[in-house]
Image 1 (spheres, helix red, strand yellow):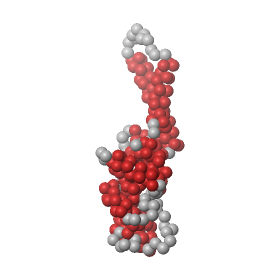
Image 2 (cartoon, helix red, strand yellow):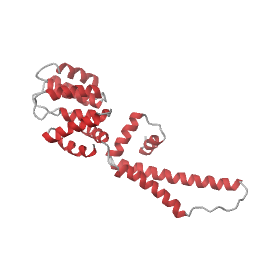
Image 3 (tube, one colour):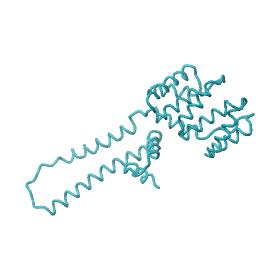
Image 4 (cartoon, rainbow, N blue to C red):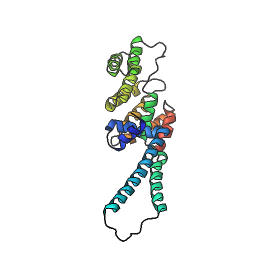
Length: 236
């Protein structure tokens, strides 16, 4: 499917709700794609105008002549089209992205693949990471669940289990694991940041406020994710 067909499917209601969310995330994250959407919108506006004028001409050809009515000058029509294009451009480029869009972009960019270069990690943990990276999430879940009950590997296993639930959009389960992760006395604990991610994606009433409190903690204590926290707090 070409990008043009994909864009057309969005505006004609063909895409599923999940596909629409991915589309909207791409608009926020990819300037090239957003420009293509803006071009599509402007082209569609012009095409509608041309079709409207064509229908008017056809209608005139089959109806008796009537007294001429005053028509808008061409420059006003062009101004109206330009206003529509500018409005679409504002929506795509000027309107600041929401924290949900920012967090989704972060997940897609940084959390769909995990590092497999950890020194001294148990072989079973590496197997779970490999399964995760291959999107064999059911298999990875079983491995991480088993390891999360073993003291030596529990912190990492709990973290990866939470990330697995996050990328598969099981936000309630992800939050449970990140709450567990927060309780471990480990250096530079990423639990607060990851929990904030899950809350921003779940987006239930009160979730954004709770995520904001966690991001403030991340920022103030310079925990993992503090640079993102500084930026995202501007949008909450």
